[in-house]
Amino acid sequence: METAYLIETVIKIVVILLIFSALAGIGTYFERKVLAFMQRRLGPVNVGPFGLLQVAADGIKLFTKEDIVPTNVVARIFKIAPVITAATAFMAAAAIPFLPSFTLFGYEVHPIVADINIGILYILGIMGVGLYGPLLGGMASANKFSLLSAARGAAVFISYEVVTGLSILAPIMMVGSLSLIDFNEYQAGGFTSWILWSQPVAFLLFWIAAFAETGRTPFHLIANDHEIIDGFGTEYSGMRWGLFFIGEYANMFFISFVISIIFLGGYGDGSFLGAIGLLLKVAFFFFFFLWTRAAWPDVRPDQLMWLCWKVLMPIAVINIVITGIVMM
Amino acid sequence: MHNEHIEEHFNNRNVTELDSNYYMVDIADYPTDGWGKFKRVVKRSFRGELFVGLWVVLREMIKFDVHTVQYPAEKMPIGPRYRAVHEMKRLWESDAERCIGCGLCEKICISNCIRIDTKIDENSRKEVSEYSINLGRCIFCGYCAEVCPELAITHGGEYENASDQREHFIMFEDMLTPLDKMKAGTQLEFEGFGAITPHEDERVKKTPLAY
Image (cartoon, rainbow over all chains, first blue to last red; front, side, top):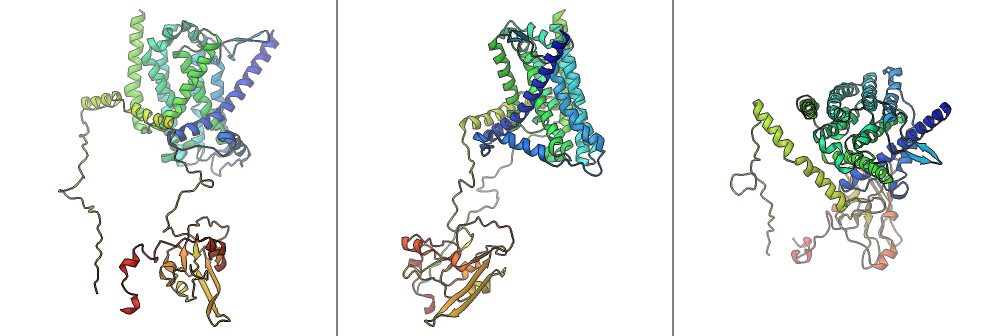
Protein backbone atom coordinates (compact mmCIF):
# COMPACT_ATOMS: atom_id res chain seq x y z
CA MET A 1 0.00 0.00 0.00
CA GLU A 2 2.74 2.45 0.94
CA THR A 3 4.75 1.59 -2.15
CA ALA A 4 1.73 1.96 -4.39
CA TYR A 5 1.05 5.39 -2.90
CA LEU A 6 4.67 6.40 -3.43
CA ILE A 7 4.68 5.27 -7.05
CA GLU A 8 1.36 6.98 -7.70
CA THR A 9 2.62 10.25 -6.23
CA VAL A 10 5.86 10.16 -8.22
CA ILE A 11 3.94 9.49 -11.43
CA LYS A 12 1.57 12.39 -10.68
CA ILE A 13 4.48 14.73 -10.01
CA VAL A 14 6.21 13.76 -13.24
CA VAL A 15 3.00 14.12 -15.25
CA ILE A 16 2.25 17.55 -13.77
CA LEU A 17 5.83 18.69 -14.33
CA LEU A 18 5.83 17.56 -17.94
CA ILE A 19 2.37 18.88 -18.77
CA PHE A 20 2.93 22.28 -17.25
CA SER A 21 6.44 22.70 -18.65
CA ALA A 22 4.98 22.00 -22.07
CA LEU A 23 1.99 24.25 -21.34
CA ALA A 24 4.37 27.05 -20.41
CA GLY A 25 5.88 26.74 -23.87
CA ILE A 26 2.52 26.53 -25.59
CA GLY A 27 1.41 29.44 -23.42
CA THR A 28 4.10 31.59 -24.98
CA TYR A 29 2.83 30.54 -28.40
CA PHE A 30 -0.71 31.56 -27.50
CA GLU A 31 0.51 34.78 -25.97
CA ARG A 32 2.31 35.71 -29.17
CA LYS A 33 -0.64 34.76 -31.34
CA VAL A 34 -3.25 36.52 -29.21
CA LEU A 35 -1.16 39.67 -28.84
CA ALA A 36 -0.46 39.62 -32.56
CA PHE A 37 -4.12 39.25 -33.53
CA MET A 38 -5.10 42.02 -31.15
CA GLN A 39 -2.49 44.26 -32.74
CA ARG A 40 -3.46 43.24 -36.29
CA ARG A 41 -0.37 41.16 -36.81
CA LEU A 42 0.07 37.50 -37.65
CA GLY A 43 2.48 36.35 -34.97
CA PRO A 44 4.67 33.30 -35.61
CA VAL A 45 3.72 31.65 -38.92
CA ASN A 46 6.86 30.22 -40.43
CA VAL A 47 7.95 27.34 -38.17
CA GLY A 48 5.53 24.47 -38.67
CA PRO A 49 1.81 24.75 -39.40
CA PHE A 50 0.49 28.10 -38.07
CA GLY A 51 3.90 28.59 -36.45
CA LEU A 52 3.10 25.89 -33.89
CA LEU A 53 6.65 24.54 -33.88
CA GLN A 54 7.97 27.97 -32.89
CA VAL A 55 7.79 26.66 -29.33
CA ALA A 56 10.13 23.79 -30.23
CA ALA A 57 12.49 26.15 -32.03
CA ASP A 58 12.59 28.43 -28.99
CA GLY A 59 13.17 25.44 -26.73
CA ILE A 60 16.09 24.24 -28.82
CA LYS A 61 17.51 27.74 -28.80
CA LEU A 62 17.19 28.08 -25.03
CA PHE A 63 18.66 24.67 -24.31
CA THR A 64 21.64 25.03 -26.59
CA LYS A 65 22.66 28.59 -25.81
CA GLU A 66 25.87 29.20 -23.93
CA ASP A 67 25.40 29.40 -20.18
CA ILE A 68 26.84 32.83 -19.45
CA VAL A 69 27.69 33.80 -15.89
CA PRO A 70 28.89 37.42 -16.05
CA THR A 71 32.09 38.51 -14.32
CA ASN A 72 30.95 40.46 -11.29
CA VAL A 73 27.86 38.49 -10.31
CA VAL A 74 27.63 36.44 -7.15
CA ALA A 75 27.83 33.24 -9.11
CA ARG A 76 26.24 30.78 -6.69
CA ILE A 77 23.18 32.93 -5.98
CA PHE A 78 22.97 33.99 -9.60
CA LYS A 79 22.77 30.35 -10.63
CA ILE A 80 20.21 29.26 -8.04
CA ALA A 81 17.74 32.16 -8.52
CA PRO A 82 15.95 30.93 -11.66
CA VAL A 83 15.63 27.48 -10.13
CA ILE A 84 13.82 29.02 -7.18
CA THR A 85 11.29 30.69 -9.46
CA ALA A 86 10.55 27.56 -11.46
CA ALA A 87 10.65 25.21 -8.47
CA THR A 88 8.32 27.27 -6.29
CA ALA A 89 5.86 27.62 -9.15
CA PHE A 90 5.68 23.84 -9.51
CA MET A 91 5.75 23.18 -5.76
CA ALA A 92 2.66 25.35 -5.39
CA ALA A 93 0.90 23.03 -7.82
CA ALA A 94 1.08 20.15 -5.32
CA ALA A 95 -2.09 21.21 -3.52
CA ILE A 96 -4.16 22.06 -6.59
CA PRO A 97 -6.79 19.54 -7.76
CA PHE A 98 -6.43 19.81 -11.51
CA LEU A 99 -9.33 17.55 -12.40
CA PRO A 100 -12.00 15.61 -10.53
CA SER A 101 -10.94 12.11 -9.49
CA PHE A 102 -11.45 9.53 -12.22
CA THR A 103 -10.99 5.81 -12.68
CA LEU A 104 -8.14 4.63 -14.87
CA PHE A 105 -7.83 0.84 -15.49
CA GLY A 106 -9.90 0.17 -12.41
CA TYR A 107 -7.70 2.33 -10.24
CA GLU A 108 -9.09 5.54 -8.76
CA VAL A 109 -6.85 8.51 -9.52
CA HIS A 110 -7.02 11.75 -7.59
CA PRO A 111 -5.35 14.38 -9.80
CA ILE A 112 -3.89 16.20 -6.82
CA VAL A 113 -0.43 15.43 -5.53
CA ALA A 114 -1.19 16.05 -1.87
CA ASP A 115 -4.65 16.83 -0.53
CA ILE A 116 -3.36 18.59 2.56
CA ASN A 117 -5.78 20.32 4.86
CA ILE A 118 -3.94 23.64 4.56
CA GLY A 119 -3.96 23.71 0.75
CA ILE A 120 -4.53 27.43 0.16
CA LEU A 121 -2.13 28.49 2.88
CA TYR A 122 0.49 26.22 1.35
CA ILE A 123 -0.08 27.56 -2.18
CA LEU A 124 0.06 31.19 -1.08
CA GLY A 125 3.13 30.53 1.03
CA ILE A 126 5.04 28.79 -1.75
CA MET A 127 4.04 31.46 -4.24
CA GLY A 128 5.33 33.99 -1.72
CA VAL A 129 8.65 32.13 -1.61
CA GLY A 130 8.73 32.61 -5.37
CA LEU A 131 9.70 36.19 -4.55
CA TYR A 132 13.23 34.98 -3.91
CA GLY A 133 13.77 34.20 -7.59
CA PRO A 134 13.55 37.79 -8.85
CA LEU A 135 14.95 39.18 -5.59
CA LEU A 136 18.10 37.05 -5.44
CA GLY A 137 18.56 37.03 -9.20
CA GLY A 138 18.31 40.79 -9.35
CA MET A 139 20.56 41.40 -6.37
CA ALA A 140 23.23 38.96 -7.52
CA SER A 141 23.34 40.30 -11.08
CA ALA A 142 25.72 43.25 -10.44
CA ASN A 143 23.49 45.40 -12.61
CA LYS A 144 21.62 48.47 -11.48
CA PHE A 145 18.54 47.65 -13.54
CA SER A 146 18.39 44.19 -12.05
CA LEU A 147 18.81 45.68 -8.61
CA LEU A 148 15.92 48.08 -9.21
CA SER A 149 13.83 45.18 -10.38
CA ALA A 150 14.73 43.16 -7.28
CA ALA A 151 13.67 46.06 -5.06
CA ARG A 152 10.43 46.48 -6.95
CA GLY A 153 9.84 42.74 -6.89
CA ALA A 154 10.24 42.57 -3.15
CA ALA A 155 7.92 45.53 -2.62
CA VAL A 156 5.24 44.28 -4.97
CA PHE A 157 5.24 40.66 -3.85
CA ILE A 158 5.14 41.45 -0.16
CA SER A 159 2.47 44.11 -0.60
CA TYR A 160 0.21 42.01 -2.72
CA GLU A 161 0.62 38.97 -0.49
CA VAL A 162 -1.39 41.07 1.96
CA VAL A 163 -4.19 41.65 -0.53
CA THR A 164 -4.21 38.02 -1.64
CA GLY A 165 -4.31 36.73 1.91
CA LEU A 166 -6.94 39.15 3.18
CA SER A 167 -9.19 38.82 0.15
CA ILE A 168 -9.18 35.04 0.35
CA LEU A 169 -9.86 35.10 4.07
CA ALA A 170 -13.57 35.82 3.58
CA PRO A 171 -14.21 32.74 1.39
CA ILE A 172 -12.15 30.67 3.82
CA MET A 173 -14.39 31.84 6.66
CA MET A 174 -17.43 30.78 4.68
CA VAL A 175 -16.10 27.37 3.70
CA GLY A 176 -14.39 26.71 6.99
CA SER A 177 -11.50 24.83 5.44
CA LEU A 178 -8.22 25.54 3.69
CA SER A 179 -8.34 22.54 1.37
CA LEU A 180 -9.14 23.34 -2.25
CA ILE A 181 -11.13 20.11 -2.49
CA ASP A 182 -13.39 21.34 0.33
CA PHE A 183 -13.79 24.59 -1.59
CA ASN A 184 -14.88 22.60 -4.57
CA GLU A 185 -17.34 20.52 -2.55
CA TYR A 186 -18.78 23.71 -1.04
CA GLN A 187 -19.67 24.93 -4.55
CA ALA A 188 -20.74 21.53 -5.92
CA GLY A 189 -24.34 22.74 -6.13
CA GLY A 190 -23.64 24.29 -9.50
CA PHE A 191 -23.62 27.73 -11.05
CA THR A 192 -25.66 29.48 -8.35
CA SER A 193 -23.56 28.16 -5.47
CA TRP A 194 -20.31 29.65 -6.73
CA ILE A 195 -18.47 31.75 -4.15
CA LEU A 196 -18.20 34.44 -6.84
CA TRP A 197 -21.83 35.40 -6.14
CA SER A 198 -21.45 35.64 -2.39
CA GLN A 199 -17.93 37.16 -2.45
CA PRO A 200 -17.65 39.29 -5.60
CA VAL A 201 -15.38 41.82 -3.89
CA ALA A 202 -13.00 39.14 -2.71
CA PHE A 203 -13.00 37.67 -6.21
CA LEU A 204 -12.05 40.98 -7.80
CA LEU A 205 -9.36 41.69 -5.21
CA PHE A 206 -7.85 38.24 -5.60
CA TRP A 207 -7.93 38.56 -9.37
CA ILE A 208 -6.21 41.96 -9.26
CA ALA A 209 -3.61 40.63 -6.84
CA ALA A 210 -3.03 37.65 -9.14
CA PHE A 211 -1.70 40.06 -11.75
CA ALA A 212 0.82 41.36 -9.24
CA GLU A 213 1.73 37.88 -8.00
CA THR A 214 2.49 36.68 -11.51
CA GLY A 215 3.98 40.02 -12.61
CA ARG A 216 1.67 40.41 -15.57
CA THR A 217 0.96 43.52 -17.48
CA PRO A 218 -0.88 46.14 -15.55
CA PHE A 219 1.62 45.32 -12.80
CA HIS A 220 4.51 44.23 -14.98
CA LEU A 221 7.00 46.66 -13.46
CA ILE A 222 9.24 43.97 -11.96
CA ALA A 223 10.65 43.17 -15.39
CA ASN A 224 9.50 46.23 -17.25
CA ASP A 225 11.22 46.09 -20.61
CA HIS A 226 10.98 49.76 -21.44
CA GLU A 227 12.20 51.09 -18.10
CA ILE A 228 14.63 48.59 -16.64
CA ILE A 229 15.40 46.43 -19.68
CA ASP A 230 14.31 43.01 -18.44
CA GLY A 231 14.82 43.71 -14.76
CA PHE A 232 16.11 40.67 -12.92
CA GLY A 233 16.37 38.80 -16.23
CA THR A 234 18.78 41.27 -17.83
CA GLU A 235 21.95 39.28 -17.18
CA TYR A 236 20.40 35.87 -17.76
CA SER A 237 20.56 33.94 -20.97
CA GLY A 238 19.85 30.48 -22.23
CA MET A 239 18.14 27.97 -20.01
CA ARG A 240 18.54 30.00 -16.83
CA TRP A 241 16.44 32.71 -18.37
CA GLY A 242 14.17 29.97 -19.69
CA LEU A 243 13.55 28.77 -16.13
CA PHE A 244 12.36 32.25 -15.14
CA PHE A 245 10.09 32.10 -18.13
CA ILE A 246 8.69 28.67 -17.36
CA GLY A 247 8.15 29.76 -13.78
CA GLU A 248 6.21 32.84 -14.86
CA TYR A 249 3.95 30.95 -17.23
CA ALA A 250 3.43 27.99 -14.90
CA ASN A 251 2.47 30.51 -12.22
CA MET A 252 -0.10 32.01 -14.57
CA PHE A 253 -1.65 28.62 -15.15
CA PHE A 254 -1.64 27.67 -11.48
CA ILE A 255 -3.13 30.96 -10.31
CA SER A 256 -5.81 30.55 -12.98
CA PHE A 257 -6.60 27.12 -11.50
CA VAL A 258 -6.71 28.59 -8.00
CA ILE A 259 -9.10 31.40 -8.97
CA SER A 260 -11.34 28.99 -10.83
CA ILE A 261 -11.48 26.54 -7.95
CA ILE A 262 -11.94 29.06 -5.16
CA PHE A 263 -14.43 31.42 -6.78
CA LEU A 264 -15.89 29.79 -9.87
CA GLY A 265 -16.89 26.37 -8.62
CA GLY A 266 -13.85 24.42 -9.78
CA TYR A 267 -14.81 21.13 -11.40
CA GLY A 268 -18.28 21.24 -9.89
CA ASP A 269 -19.88 17.87 -9.22
CA GLY A 270 -16.88 15.98 -10.58
CA SER A 271 -18.52 14.88 -13.80
CA PHE A 272 -16.81 14.96 -17.17
CA LEU A 273 -18.61 18.20 -18.01
CA GLY A 274 -17.39 19.70 -14.76
CA ALA A 275 -13.82 18.83 -15.67
CA ILE A 276 -14.20 20.46 -19.09
CA GLY A 277 -15.78 23.45 -17.35
CA LEU A 278 -12.77 23.82 -15.08
CA LEU A 279 -10.40 23.74 -18.04
CA LEU A 280 -12.52 26.34 -19.85
CA LYS A 281 -12.47 28.62 -16.81
CA VAL A 282 -8.69 28.25 -16.57
CA ALA A 283 -8.38 28.97 -20.27
CA PHE A 284 -10.44 32.13 -19.83
CA PHE A 285 -8.29 33.39 -16.98
CA PHE A 286 -5.13 32.62 -18.92
CA PHE A 287 -6.56 34.39 -21.94
CA PHE A 288 -7.41 37.35 -19.75
CA PHE A 289 -3.75 37.63 -18.73
CA LEU A 290 -2.86 37.99 -22.42
CA TRP A 291 -5.85 40.22 -23.13
CA THR A 292 -4.90 42.80 -20.53
CA ARG A 293 -1.36 42.77 -21.82
CA ALA A 294 -2.62 43.88 -25.21
CA ALA A 295 -5.09 46.41 -23.85
CA TRP A 296 -3.79 48.07 -20.74
CA PRO A 297 -0.76 50.20 -19.93
CA ASP A 298 1.49 49.54 -16.97
CA VAL A 299 1.05 51.50 -13.78
CA ARG A 300 3.90 53.26 -12.04
CA PRO A 301 5.50 51.59 -9.03
CA ASP A 302 4.21 54.26 -6.65
CA GLN A 303 0.70 53.89 -8.10
CA LEU A 304 0.95 50.16 -7.58
CA MET A 305 1.89 50.60 -3.93
CA TRP A 306 -0.81 53.21 -3.50
CA LEU A 307 -3.37 50.87 -5.04
CA CYS A 308 -2.32 48.07 -2.74
CA TRP A 309 -2.12 49.81 0.61
CA LYS A 310 -4.64 52.61 0.27
CA VAL A 311 -7.34 50.97 -1.84
CA LEU A 312 -7.25 47.20 -2.06
CA MET A 313 -6.16 46.40 1.47
CA PRO A 314 -8.82 48.57 3.20
CA ILE A 315 -11.48 47.13 0.92
CA ALA A 316 -10.29 43.61 1.75
CA VAL A 317 -10.44 44.33 5.47
CA ILE A 318 -13.93 45.82 5.18
CA ASN A 319 -14.98 42.79 3.17
CA ILE A 320 -13.78 40.47 5.92
CA VAL A 321 -15.59 42.48 8.60
CA ILE A 322 -18.85 42.48 6.66
CA THR A 323 -18.53 38.76 5.94
CA GLY A 324 -17.96 38.14 9.63
CA ILE A 325 -21.00 40.18 10.66
CA VAL A 326 -23.19 38.44 8.10
CA MET A 327 -21.97 35.01 9.24
CA MET A 328 -22.73 35.81 12.90
CA MET B 1 7.41 84.42 -76.10
CA HIS B 2 5.22 83.70 -73.26
CA ASN B 3 6.68 82.65 -70.00
CA GLU B 4 4.13 80.95 -67.92
CA HIS B 5 4.54 81.35 -64.22
CA ILE B 6 3.64 78.19 -62.38
CA GLU B 7 2.39 78.83 -58.91
CA GLU B 8 2.64 76.24 -56.24
CA HIS B 9 0.13 76.22 -53.44
CA PHE B 10 1.19 75.03 -50.06
CA ASN B 11 -1.06 74.31 -47.12
CA ASN B 12 -1.03 77.01 -44.54
CA ARG B 13 0.20 75.26 -41.47
CA ASN B 14 0.63 78.33 -39.31
CA VAL B 15 -1.09 78.08 -35.97
CA THR B 16 -3.01 81.29 -35.75
CA GLU B 17 -6.01 82.51 -33.86
CA LEU B 18 -8.19 82.93 -36.92
CA ASP B 19 -9.08 80.20 -39.32
CA SER B 20 -7.47 77.46 -37.36
CA ASN B 21 -8.50 73.99 -36.39
CA TYR B 22 -6.28 74.05 -33.34
CA TYR B 23 -7.82 74.24 -29.93
CA MET B 24 -6.60 73.78 -26.40
CA VAL B 25 -7.27 70.38 -24.88
CA ASP B 26 -9.63 70.65 -21.98
CA ILE B 27 -7.69 69.31 -19.02
CA ALA B 28 -9.10 69.85 -15.59
CA ASP B 29 -6.76 70.95 -12.83
CA TYR B 30 -5.27 68.25 -10.69
CA PRO B 31 -7.06 67.88 -7.37
CA THR B 32 -5.04 69.04 -4.39
CA ASP B 33 -7.11 67.99 -1.40
CA GLY B 34 -7.87 64.48 -0.30
CA TRP B 35 -11.56 64.57 -1.13
CA GLY B 36 -10.83 65.75 -4.69
CA LYS B 37 -8.31 62.98 -5.18
CA PHE B 38 -10.76 60.44 -3.84
CA LYS B 39 -13.43 61.66 -6.22
CA ARG B 40 -11.00 61.40 -9.12
CA VAL B 41 -10.10 57.83 -8.19
CA VAL B 42 -13.76 56.81 -7.96
CA LYS B 43 -14.53 58.48 -11.27
CA ARG B 44 -11.64 56.81 -13.01
CA SER B 45 -12.36 53.42 -11.47
CA PHE B 46 -16.00 53.28 -12.45
CA ARG B 47 -15.98 55.11 -15.76
CA GLY B 48 -15.23 51.81 -17.44
CA GLU B 49 -12.31 52.98 -19.52
CA LEU B 50 -10.46 49.76 -18.81
CA PHE B 51 -13.26 47.86 -20.49
CA VAL B 52 -13.18 50.18 -23.48
CA GLY B 53 -9.54 49.19 -23.95
CA LEU B 54 -10.36 45.53 -23.59
CA TRP B 55 -13.18 45.82 -26.11
CA VAL B 56 -11.05 47.62 -28.67
CA VAL B 57 -8.36 44.94 -28.79
CA LEU B 58 -10.94 42.13 -28.70
CA ARG B 59 -12.83 43.76 -31.58
CA GLU B 60 -9.65 43.89 -33.66
CA MET B 61 -8.98 40.25 -32.85
CA ILE B 62 -12.47 39.20 -33.95
CA LYS B 63 -12.35 41.30 -37.12
CA PHE B 64 -9.02 39.63 -37.93
CA ASP B 65 -8.05 42.48 -40.23
CA VAL B 66 -4.38 41.58 -40.33
CA HIS B 67 -2.06 44.10 -41.94
CA THR B 68 1.13 42.06 -41.91
CA VAL B 69 3.12 41.99 -45.12
CA GLN B 70 4.87 38.63 -45.10
CA TYR B 71 7.98 40.17 -46.55
CA PRO B 72 9.96 37.68 -48.61
CA ALA B 73 6.74 36.24 -50.00
CA GLU B 74 4.84 39.52 -50.30
CA LYS B 75 6.22 42.96 -50.99
CA MET B 76 4.84 46.43 -50.60
CA PRO B 77 4.41 48.29 -53.90
CA ILE B 78 7.00 51.03 -54.29
CA GLY B 79 6.64 54.28 -56.15
CA PRO B 80 8.08 54.82 -59.63
CA ARG B 81 10.25 57.59 -58.17
CA TYR B 82 11.88 55.22 -55.70
CA ARG B 83 15.68 55.47 -55.72
CA ALA B 84 17.11 51.99 -55.47
CA VAL B 85 19.73 50.14 -57.52
CA HIS B 86 20.54 51.92 -60.79
CA GLU B 87 19.37 50.91 -64.22
CA MET B 88 20.71 51.73 -67.67
CA LYS B 89 17.99 52.37 -70.22
CA ARG B 90 17.98 51.67 -73.95
CA LEU B 91 16.62 53.83 -76.75
CA TRP B 92 13.11 52.95 -77.78
CA GLU B 93 13.86 53.44 -81.45
CA SER B 94 16.97 51.36 -81.92
CA ASP B 95 17.39 49.29 -78.75
CA ALA B 96 20.87 50.78 -78.51
CA GLU B 97 22.13 51.91 -75.14
CA ARG B 98 21.34 55.51 -74.34
CA CYS B 99 24.58 56.14 -72.50
CA ILE B 100 26.92 58.33 -74.55
CA GLY B 101 29.83 58.03 -72.16
CA CYS B 102 29.93 61.72 -71.25
CA GLY B 103 31.04 60.91 -67.71
CA LEU B 104 28.86 63.53 -66.01
CA CYS B 105 27.54 60.94 -63.56
CA GLU B 106 31.07 60.06 -62.50
CA LYS B 107 31.84 63.78 -62.08
CA ILE B 108 28.78 64.65 -60.02
CA CYS B 109 28.78 61.57 -57.84
CA ILE B 110 29.31 62.93 -54.33
CA SER B 111 30.35 59.63 -52.85
CA ASN B 112 32.73 58.79 -55.68
CA CYS B 113 31.23 55.42 -56.31
CA ILE B 114 30.85 55.60 -60.10
CA ARG B 115 33.78 54.74 -62.35
CA ILE B 116 33.40 55.11 -66.11
CA ASP B 117 35.89 54.40 -68.88
CA THR B 118 35.27 54.95 -72.58
CA LYS B 119 36.94 54.13 -75.88
CA ILE B 120 36.43 54.89 -79.55
CA ASP B 121 34.79 51.96 -81.25
CA GLU B 122 35.24 50.76 -84.86
CA ASN B 123 32.60 53.24 -86.12
CA SER B 124 34.53 56.10 -84.48
CA ARG B 125 31.79 56.49 -81.92
CA LYS B 126 32.42 56.88 -78.23
CA GLU B 127 31.53 53.73 -76.37
CA VAL B 128 31.48 52.79 -72.73
CA SER B 129 34.15 50.21 -72.07
CA GLU B 130 34.01 50.01 -68.29
CA TYR B 131 31.25 51.18 -66.00
CA SER B 132 30.81 50.20 -62.39
CA ILE B 133 28.95 51.54 -59.39
CA ASN B 134 30.04 50.61 -55.90
CA LEU B 135 26.68 50.10 -54.21
CA GLY B 136 28.39 49.87 -50.86
CA ARG B 137 29.47 53.51 -51.19
CA CYS B 138 26.46 54.79 -53.11
CA ILE B 139 24.11 56.88 -51.01
CA PHE B 140 21.34 56.76 -53.63
CA CYS B 141 21.10 60.54 -53.77
CA GLY B 142 19.93 60.48 -57.38
CA TYR B 143 22.37 63.09 -58.69
CA CYS B 144 23.58 60.76 -61.45
CA ALA B 145 20.05 60.24 -62.71
CA GLU B 146 19.38 63.98 -62.47
CA VAL B 147 22.50 65.04 -64.32
CA CYS B 148 22.29 62.44 -67.09
CA PRO B 149 21.47 64.34 -70.30
CA GLU B 150 20.21 61.22 -72.08
CA LEU B 151 17.98 59.85 -69.30
CA ALA B 152 20.22 56.80 -69.53
CA ILE B 153 21.17 56.12 -65.93
CA THR B 154 18.13 56.02 -63.69
CA HIS B 155 17.10 54.45 -60.45
CA GLY B 156 15.15 51.21 -60.40
CA GLY B 157 13.05 49.51 -57.77
CA GLU B 158 15.42 46.71 -56.81
CA TYR B 159 16.24 47.33 -53.18
CA GLU B 160 17.32 43.86 -52.08
CA ASN B 161 21.05 44.40 -52.42
CA ALA B 162 22.23 43.09 -49.08
CA SER B 163 25.76 41.83 -49.30
CA ASP B 164 28.28 40.20 -47.00
CA GLN B 165 30.89 42.81 -47.77
CA ARG B 166 30.89 46.57 -48.07
CA GLU B 167 32.20 46.63 -51.61
CA HIS B 168 29.36 45.50 -53.78
CA PHE B 169 29.84 46.45 -57.41
CA ILE B 170 27.28 46.50 -60.16
CA MET B 171 28.44 46.51 -63.77
CA PHE B 172 27.08 48.18 -66.88
CA GLU B 173 25.75 44.95 -68.34
CA ASP B 174 23.88 44.14 -65.16
CA MET B 175 22.19 47.53 -65.15
CA LEU B 176 21.34 47.58 -68.86
CA THR B 177 17.76 46.76 -69.78
CA PRO B 178 17.80 43.21 -71.22
CA LEU B 179 17.06 42.98 -74.93
CA ASP B 180 14.11 40.64 -74.53
CA LYS B 181 12.52 43.17 -72.18
CA MET B 182 13.15 45.80 -74.81
CA LYS B 183 11.55 43.63 -77.50
CA ALA B 184 8.54 43.10 -75.28
CA GLY B 185 8.32 46.87 -74.87
CA THR B 186 8.22 46.67 -71.10
CA GLN B 187 11.09 49.00 -70.25
CA LEU B 188 9.82 51.40 -67.62
CA GLU B 189 10.77 55.04 -67.76
CA PHE B 190 12.00 56.55 -64.52
CA GLU B 191 9.64 59.19 -63.15
CA GLY B 192 11.96 60.47 -60.47
CA PHE B 193 14.40 63.32 -60.11
CA GLY B 194 15.74 64.49 -63.48
CA ALA B 195 13.13 62.73 -65.57
CA ILE B 196 10.72 64.38 -67.92
CA THR B 197 7.62 65.63 -66.14
CA PRO B 198 4.28 64.34 -67.44
CA HIS B 199 3.11 67.44 -69.34
CA GLU B 200 6.47 68.37 -70.79
CA ASP B 201 5.17 68.49 -74.35
CA GLU B 202 2.76 71.33 -73.64
CA ARG B 203 5.17 73.26 -71.48
CA VAL B 204 8.31 73.20 -73.63
CA LYS B 205 7.87 75.56 -76.56
CA LYS B 206 11.34 75.28 -78.02
CA THR B 207 14.44 73.33 -77.27
CA PRO B 208 16.58 75.03 -74.63
CA LEU B 209 19.33 75.59 -77.19
CA ALA B 210 17.27 78.30 -78.88
CA TYR B 211 17.58 80.71 -75.96
